Length: 100
Image (cartoon, rainbow, N blue to C red; front, side, top):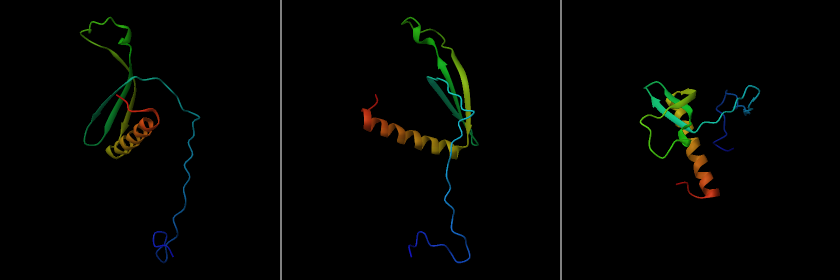
């Protein structure tokens, strides 16, 4: 018997769980900037659109970014997101070359 799959006497074997995504309420939007802040209890990600791309080459005194979404995560969920994004970038660079 494989020790990794052995179940202690009197305990039921763990059930396989399937993950299914329901996209009925999914909304997509374009964002080209993200700002991250945190406290001890949460990580806050603000997503928005910087529409200053068409400004003259002179740097304006103030840039305005239209914030559109705020995602609040526990630090644990933020770490899992960070690891998932890191893997996604590694895979991307393997396929298409290093990002600058």
